[in-house]
Image (cartoon, rainbow, N blue to C red; front, side, top):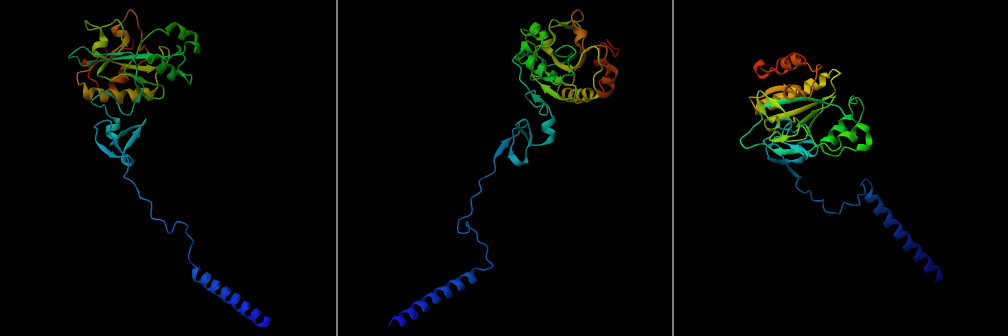
Length: 272
């Protein structure tokens, strides 16, 4: 009896082994995918963004992006929008601004130079010091000169750094605080009707070619919006107080590269 029990147990184990082998062979060649029985993950709609320039909505993947702003095309990124901002500029809003007088549009561009500290534009922090100054964030402890100007509240519409980078602080529709007490061809309060452009540098050093190229592009954008612009240096409108942009600013090169008519340069092309 015991003998038959052993034979039955052996037969049962052989049967289980043979069945398992067939199961393994049936599964050969098939890759094991732990997620094969799961339903495919649903893909949601693509995020839509709005063009800063024309306000059209488009998929984020198709937009041109600059400083977390979106544009539907490279042209719109590079243009001056209806609110007075250039898309390809770094926007660093200054609190030092006002609305322009009623029915006044800018018809004058004033060119300045600036270096913080004076003569320190070669330092890696120079551009940031200027930005901080126009935003009332300049740390007086950073340099003795900063202690002298820390209470001043000034701004400009644009800054062009030594590398040709464009920074915008104030919309061209608004009034920046750049000209101070000034007069242009008998018209007082030039801030009311002007756009201020600061070139990083001083009165003792040539400006960089990259700055002239950036200035050229900027003037082309401004002239397209404000076709009657005239041009002057800060020293032209405040001769008793200011000397910028100085004798190293090349007015002839500026006029040649921008194509500005000589009649729109009432102070001429001579260095001053």
